[in-house]
Image (cartoon, rainbow, N blue to C red; front, side, top):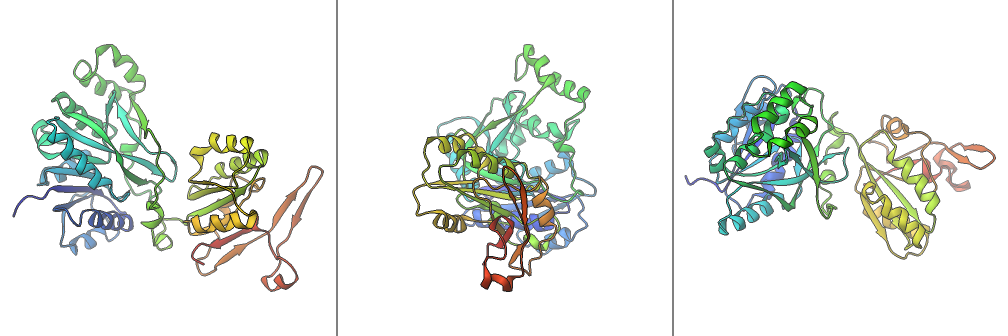
Length: 419
């Protein structure tokens, strides 16, 4: 059997729902490419191993205990593809990520460029809004992306590092030392879903002790960076390089790839917060501040602006990175704008917090989401009117009182987006 064009190597441990989503996304992405999928599992106890056994297109490498970089290197060693794509079970590729990376790799190699790896831009969802790639010791440290298989074999990488946080950088620095270039694909994006079970090993995400950091820097000083830079790198070796243009995912990958959010305790409902505004810079500032200080992380923030004058536009520009979706165009009033927001919403539930509205506390969404029950289409409560001289609570009424007036305010109502 001929070797495939690409091998996808995925590390896994006790995150079966997310692993299945990751694998399904890879299958769809590479349905027209010759490929193989290799999953290295750390001895999961949540049914992952039993699921892997039933997958006829997956080569499974089962280890016992939390995965180490050396374990993951075993999957890389087993790979037969010309290229290797490395992912984790909690990473969700945006459609086109791998294919765009493959095309870029082929293009560079046709130009006789000695290319060893291509990094994909990613964000740690839901904590981060912007996509970036990590840089360590001044070198691209590819976490999600593509490698030339023969290049990895040439440098003899086996995943042996003193601290897991250095694993990605150590591989990339080895390639750089061997004369290979490392670049990013500006058209490849990954959602790294970080709100998962506490069972998952987190050592790779933690900072190494200072003595281990010092030894790692000393290993590479004078090899891939000037010795004069060593002292600074020992203080801070890692940074993020953000995508130069920014990216708004038209496919809403995080939302689309998590269709069973309520079926797993590890996956929480996404709340879409919609704000409509016209010529209210001060009110918009208050609302954005209230939304962004919420402790509940699983949110989608949409602002629909009716082509406001300059002061409101300045607020929107200043806080652009905090907004998942911004639509600014003329409309026919508040309800027309709210209907636009409904069409844009991609979460599980939708709440309207229009310009000037604020949540009662930073923990408001956290408290509400602990009470949400999928069997109910609308969940509502009380709202406060805050006036310059006083504060008044408007208590909600039973829904059968709607014939006498609105029984609740939109600031206190959560609607299922599916309805």
